[in-house]
Amino acid sequence: GALLPLGADSLLADAVGREVATRLRALLLPTVHVGDASQHAGRPGTLTLRSDTVSDIAFQLGQSLGRVGVRLIALVSTHGGNAAALEAAVHRLAAEGIAACAPQGDTGPNPGGHSGPWLTSVMLALHPQLVRLEAAEVDVAGASAERGAREFERFVASVVDQIAAQAQGGADP
Image 1 (cartoon, rainbow, N blue to C red):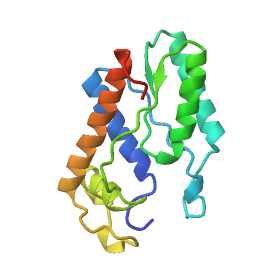
Image 2 (image 1 turned 45 degrees about the vertical axis):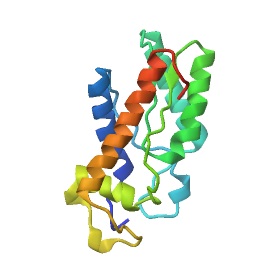
Image 3 (image 1 turned 135 degrees about the vertical axis):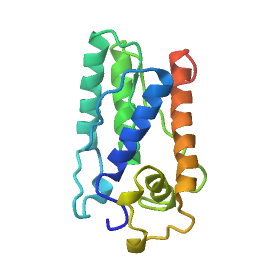
Image 4 (image 1 turned 90 degrees about the horizontal axis):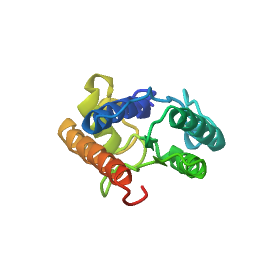
């Protein structure tokens, strides 16, 4: 849309991935930039894959990592449309004896919809030059870089906590 750049979710995924990998001292693979965005398919510039395709991609990448001895695979997404597909991949990997998880980041109590205050704030914190507040077509009241930095930290910390719990044999994220 006009407010945020095409690929905002991918830009966020890149930043989340880097920060999570740094905190856990883990291997970081490149972001898969196209996922299940079928709910946005009518919007200009939207690329989307079927959910089963997203799941197959995650599963096959997980198999590859499992074959070379990676002990835990974290399938991290910043786009809610991928959640079911990644959970399905986690279950398929588990059936093959490969430990995986698909942690859901904590967006807090009132994130708003796509391109709403949460994502707008996070993008203001990460890539302010790409945000056009004057072009907002949705209510982004309260969006700020300061809020974005806090929201980004909450999201990353929750993903790190879920992966760490899985690595220690804890709850199934």
